[in-house]
Image (cartoon, rainbow, N blue to C red; front, side):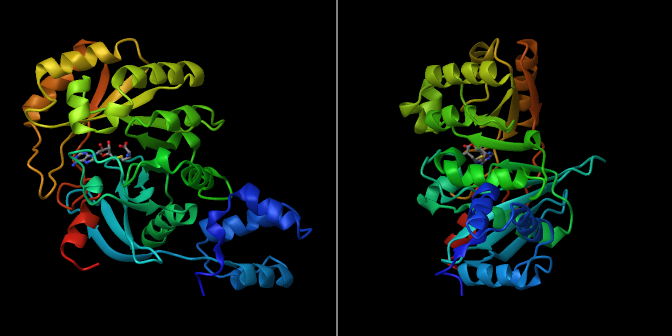
Length: 352
Ligand code: SAH
């Protein structure tokens, strides 16, 4: 059934409205369809009982509502983090994660993938080890959110594009997907609770800066000198730190918003007191905070995280230098939670 017909989830609300307009249907029909799909989890047009029968027939004829099958779930015993492996219609797989809050906020954060594999090849990251296969369609990004929502039956409150792939290199599909996450007729997640994370792909950051919605930006920094950063992240050779920092300053000025920098702490590589001082110097005066992430071990890679004490020392030096930071709790250490690890492991096993 799928295959020939287009997945209706690839359309934005605006595109769907335009399509219905050509059929002389009012715009609110598109809103109803969005609510059926994203809020009620309905997967057949026949069940959309408040639509005219003729419209239901038209939609069934032209569109499919595809889904991605969950083929593996890992649940952390430590904190309830759930990691899902989704099988796409062409047999490829992607990961999505649900991170429930540890506190009483009831926060339910989903972490979504934007591509099958990744082209950026960061040396410490499992996602890049297998290279890139292809971009995800908008509908496939949203299928991860739908699958998680359907599995937990809980309202998703936050979303981060921090799964596999470089979201700003699949710009249009990612923007369309986060618009549906944000829409009151879609998932209804506040714009400020939706974060796009980038390895520092400057052309994408420049486009993102022009977006009207107040989505958040996170940048994977991981090093404060070009020497270390280029070694860890090949993209730094094309878009080095000085250029990246210029764009960051422009972003915070234009948008009046803070940037979060992700910094993976790797033993003997970027986590010494000297590295912390370099980071303070680099970020001085910028409206930002730093998220320190102790390296999550990846099978086949020899990197390891520093001790908790070393991480604390690193953080203290940032605080002393006036840079706000947190050390991210390792929420998925027991379930392959680092970016791309579940897919990597399953592929290595030759099961897929
Ligand atoms: N390509 C985007 C989106 C991926 S986000 C980006 O680079 O921002 C995933 C985050 O997890 C990135 O900050 C990435 O650097 C980090 N990460 C990848 N592998 C990791 C590992 N083994 N341990 C800890 N963090 C890791």
